[in-house]
Amino acid sequence: MASLLNLSLLCLAASGPAFASPARLARAESTVTVTQTVEAPSPTSTAWNAGAVTEYPIHSSCNHTERAQIKRGLKEAIILAQHAKDHILRWGNSSELYQKYFGAAPSGEAIGWFDKIVNVDKAGILFRCDNPDGNCANEGWAGHWRGANATDETVICPLSYETRRPLVAMCGLGYTVANSETNIYWASDLVHRLFHVPKIGEGVVEHYADGYEGALELAKTKPEETVRNSETLQYFALEAYAFDIAVPGEGCLGKVDPKPRTSEAPATETPTPTATALQAPSATSDAPKECHTHSDGVVHCD
Ligand SMILES: *[C@@H]1O[C@H](CO)[C@@H](O)[C@H](O)[C@H]1NC(C)=O
Ligand SMILES: *[C@@H]1O[C@H](CO)[C@@H](O)[C@H](O)[C@H]1NC(C)=O
Ligand SMILES: *[C@@H]1O[C@H](CO)[C@@H](O)[C@H](O)[C@H]1NC(C)=O
Image (cartoon, rainbow, N blue to C red; front, side, top):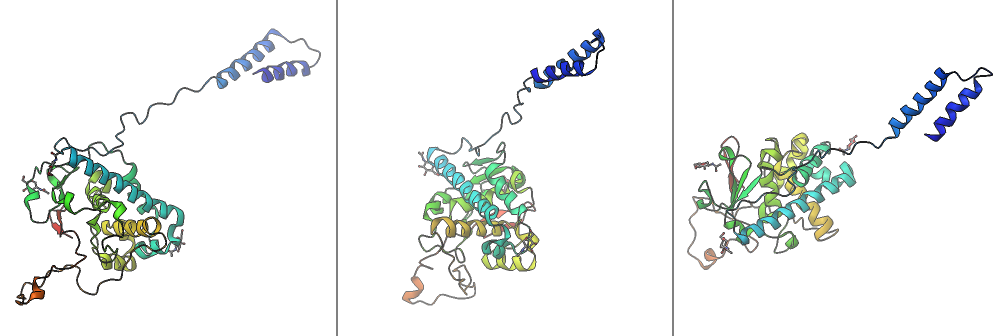
């Protein structure tokens, strides 16, 4: 302000022998006034995000034990999604892992879906434990999206607490990316469930191809679908975490088992009454088969 005032006085001086008329003085004063307005402190920013919900809500129907496990699982889902995002932001499509799962697809969409898991406003999204639709009674159901009954709600069934593993167990107990189910970890299971919630998946992140080999095939045939294919996003996040974080530089990809992933014998085959027929299906058998209902009412089992 002081320098502008000096400038105005200089202008007056430079205007020659003529007297500084009252009109000129008035102009000089008005210049100073304008400068003062510009230098006034800017108004304090508005609380644009007042009321933001930054943690996933858990329903009162969950007891302390259930709540603690769901809460930890959700934290791990965020850690898994955050690392997947970080990997893509660091390496883009120059990453072999990126190319393997997303082919020629641009990277922005996958980054966006992972970011939504981490940073979306979580108001209205709800995890509950009271089995309101009765679906926890279904054989093998560890949880389900409530679909048309309550589109932002997810039910976690008791089976989850027995079968889901923490992220620190990554690559342990015979897990391999290629042969194990994606829902074996709380983190990846909840990433899947969150993608079903419209506030996150927007009805766009869906099941376009399932299974490890299905996901790899999709990268070659329809790369544009990979970035919104729920299983692709999960496999990518799991392998990135396994390779970059859990067992650095090594991971636990495994080789694709040429046999079908499930150990169920065809219905027509009768078991032979020998000792071997009594053996457990497989030492590394994964979480039970799991089903959930899609927005179109179709029940999908992993
Ligand atoms: C990676 O993305 C660039 C554009 O950013 C594109 O020109 C290039 O073909 C992509 N590479 C692969 C392997 O998809
Ligand atoms: C919605 O509720 C009905 C009846 O309570 C139940 O039969 C159905 O399975 C529920 N839908 C989902 C997706 O859980
Ligand atoms: C919470 O509910 C589970 C069933 O999911 C039960 O096994 C457990 O004992 C309960 N915990 C407490 C502290 O009541």
